[in-house]
Image 1 (tube, helix red, strand yellow):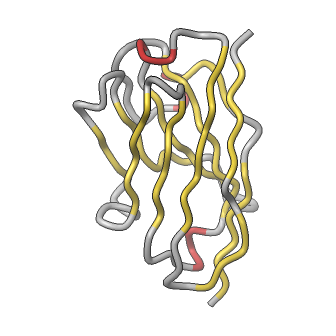
Image 2 (cartoon, helix red, strand yellow; image 1 turned 90 degrees about the vertical axis):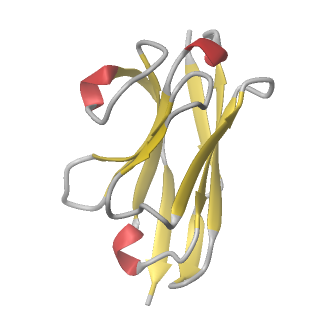
Length: 124
């Protein structure tokens, strides 16, 4: 049974920073790509950032490039999302997901397990 548990969300002001964490269990974490997605109220879930199995490759949505950084610790089975200079439009529930292979892209169907999500709210 694969489990992904996100943490680190909260209510912050515009310009602040947050770091999200996602702890994984039940799969050989270090063999799979990981990603963060987000879903704002009334909108579809969208890709935010992804990282390959060995962290050699990272990729970002244009809307967060230069502000967010994804990283992973394969010893702790954890993936992180450092979010700086947060904006009100970053308000959403953030989900981590584990890919089906060592690398993965930006599509939801490339990921087969998801966490329960953590709320990030950015006030102006």
